[in-house]
Image 1 (cartoon, rainbow, N blue to C red):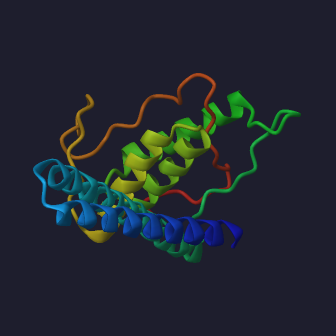
Image 2: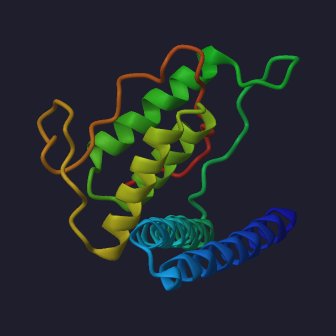
Length: 185
């Protein structure tokens, strides 16, 4: 709940900032000189871009949370019960085994959004945010019935989906429990 409040406060602050910057752009345009008008137009572009990025991030979070609720209702959310080091990090050997299982599930059922959701969680827990986001976007697209964007990686299905790597990058550990439900029920 605290995370939502912080997110909403930051969004409100950004919207106020966009409004102030937009107002400054309008004032510069109203000045009339070509330099002020040029700067005013440039300043107006910033709030538009910022609002677009904010909307895109908000839409991503809402869609991912909707999928998480649906997967939780089915009993399919990944379980975090991997061995941990004294510092709290996930044990690398256990994480590699679970990541391999998630990858195999996703390769066996490439059209199942549940597999891609769990793979995204594994990437996120491995602190591989770009791949986690791409896998989650893929899951969202599959759930919505849209054809996901083609991937650029190698593999037999590269034109249809991103290919998960053979294992997480060194020093990265995914989360998922052996008791997690399998895909393709």
